[in-house]
Image (tube, rainbow, N blue to C red; front, top):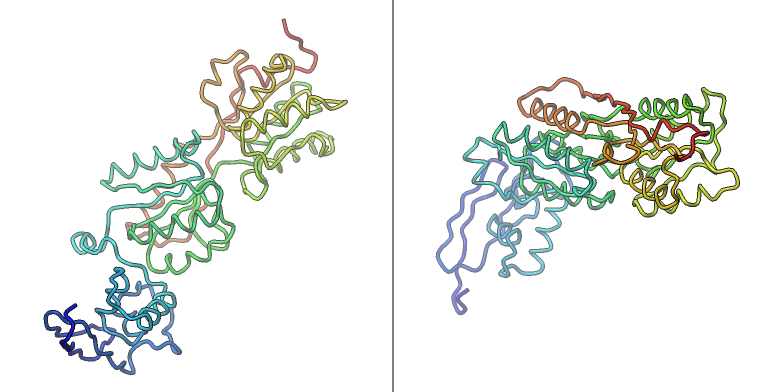
Length: 389
């Protein structure tokens, strides 16, 4: 900025169709444009359209010049607090997002050749396998994947998706933590493809891919019942997670079919860590009438169950059957029986749905269920009367 001079900017009216400005060098003052009747006003916003708001829209709504909006968006200090406040109010009202990939969009006809992936925890083997399957499908199409972990935190999920939106990804695959995805309605209307995997979207009509959680849990509990067990404990994740609730439902249904009432003393939920799961198993085994079998309904809980049984020397006396496979489960002694999900199939199916939408498929939403497979390896076939050899 050069002090002592008065340079002005001559701007014609900003309309939705464009703007024309002339700005001399070393300018530091921007005259406010006068909105026309066609422009957006703070009191009379237009109906929702499929077009993303631009800086032109923000300038018209705030009643300032395009350069002022650009300076605010880019964090330049040469804007008065009053003007900055007006611009930020307009940005919030329009839900404007800075276009970080504008040059790429121009080169690729509006596409960035990128997709976003929200995982529960990339360190979890299930999430890692899901990630790899989606990445392979994207790589075959010359598309880059941005991925992040939401850690079952709805705020973190929204933050990650916001970051992906800032980068103008073409589509987003979500393992959701939130139970309300209405905040994505505008993004969906604007043309961003959305697919939810492992769990469905909340209050949003969108494609989803999930495992057969209820059916797999029924099969697991019936397998233990068929081997003579009547005291079957259940270990589960947070019941606010739809998969955890579905697996508990399947377990309960199987017991009811066998004429066995639900015993809440044998049910432990809200467990997210292997060591906490091990402690829960130790508590169950200390009951006056302990369980003769464990159904651990998530892979990390299965690891905790294995540890607890081995510490107590009961791995050959207490049956264990887990939902979702565990690394090296087949080489333990006894080998661990599981209901195996197919994260590769889940990832491929989710990616195929996403790219189908990106290629113009506008058919109704698809909710695809991927089968699971019970794999008997030994631990789930121990009978109540068996003893260590």
